[in-house]
Each structure stands twice: as C-alpha cells, then as structure tokens.
Image (cartoon, rainbow, N blue to C red; front, top):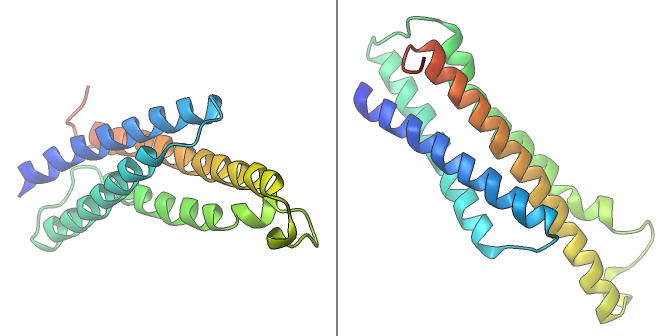
Length: 146
C-alpha cells in the first residue's frame, strides 16, 4: 500500500503541475479552456484519494518518519477546499453592484462571463500550483526526493 501511496503522490504532482501550467497559459492568453476543468477535476480527485490512502496507512500503523509529512500531505486537500470557495465568489466580484445580468445585452453578458471564467481559472491555477509545492515538500520530508 505504501508503494501505491508513492505512485499516487507522483500522480498528484504531475496532474496538478499540468493543471497549473495549462491554467496559467490560458489565463495569460485570456482564453477560456474547457479541457482545463477536466484536468483540474482529475487533479483534485487524485488529492482526495492520496489523502484517504495516507490516512489508511496511518491507521494501519505505518507512520511517517517526519511528522511534518502529515501537514504537507493534507494541505493540498485544504487548498482545494479554499480555492473552490474563492472560485464560487468570482461572479459576485466581476458583476457590477446593482446590475441585473439578465438585462444586459449579449455583448456585455459575454464580456462579464469571460471575466468570471478567467478569474475562476486564475484562482484554481494558483491553487494547483500551491498543491504542487505542498506535494513536493511532502515527498521531500518522506525521504523520496533529494
């Protein structure tokens, strides 16, 4: 089971790095990307499975050599939750105060919708890159990297 945990840790790193790079490129190009969201959801799922597997290992008596591994290993789950919460508020921050979106013209609606999607992608991209940093540190303190 520890080998699966290690392999899944690499998967978490790769998927979140791919998400971060994809999201950053799309954000800088100001181009929404449907594919980004699929990769993001796969990256988030890998984090959940990784944390659950880590908890199962701990319950089974396999303790980490360095206790800080638990913080670095569980932090990605917290980052995902916080990023999703921030993403949920993106529309309120982009829609002007007191403006009814439904009464706007098609061009204005499209402009605001693109700004909302770009803000959401930016938040989730930063979250994915932060997860890469935490996952990398978790691997380092566990002795599996340098």
